[in-house]
Image 1 (cartoon, rainbow, N blue to C red):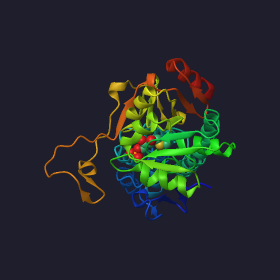
Image 2: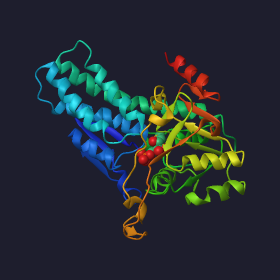
Image 3: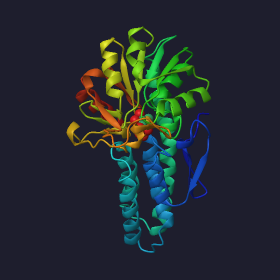
Image 4: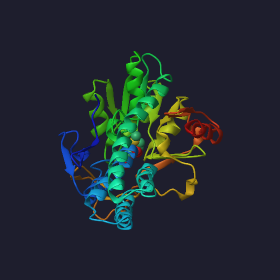
Length: 345
Ligand code: MRU
């Protein structure tokens, strides 16, 4: 069993506090949706699918917190909570997806109590589905890798970025479960080290062979024949196949192209945004202190200007395939992504 990142228990939300990893594995319990919003904002929980489900759980708490006796009042309370949860992080589309899926319930012809129950049950079901979807992504992607391959990954798209099992790391797990021996190279993923703190921790925890490299060694490892394939997750994928993911993904993909190494993206259909164009996607900008220091240690001069985008965009021409629960989309993406959604209907 992989780590369970977020779950609903006794009318509360329990999460692994990822800011404490890898030094200690601690759980936090929340009964107020504002606490869930803070947890998303401060990266106690992070990773697109995990924050999608957390948003839904946040609304489940809001439904319990509301004293509404009338349906209109309950809807208004949920709308207030939705706005606060939505504004926590702008780039991962799964958050909006999770919130909208819950808000749809309020449109049904139901009483206040029925809506409350249905909101909670739907959020719980979304958490269960997430693991199943990741296992399907894993199975579909496991065909892409061969015995003894070394697979590079960036950031953390593992159990810790989802409810469990992971997307990119789910593919690696499924490849291993299919009997193939594989090794992983994890980039440390500056500035806040999701690779070293989370991916290295999670793969070691599960007994998967992993080596850590500084982000600056991506070119070296590829040029020296140490990498057979790359797999990453995504925060938002457009109809055109443009992929938004953790800052640095674009550099890894460019380097993979230079060395003829296949570069794959693994993500559920809830990560697709079929409406936006590349220039309307908001890239989250994070605080300067993430760059001016490492941990608590200051490594840059006082007063330095900083640019700290949390995500970048990888264009479709650098991507060999996008692995989903409904199959693998290959270029040209306009057509292949449309087919994935048709298969969903
Ligand atoms: O800032 P984070 O840690 O939330 O960024 C996470 C990523 O970029 C992941 O690669 C992405 O959300 C996919 S997770 C399955």
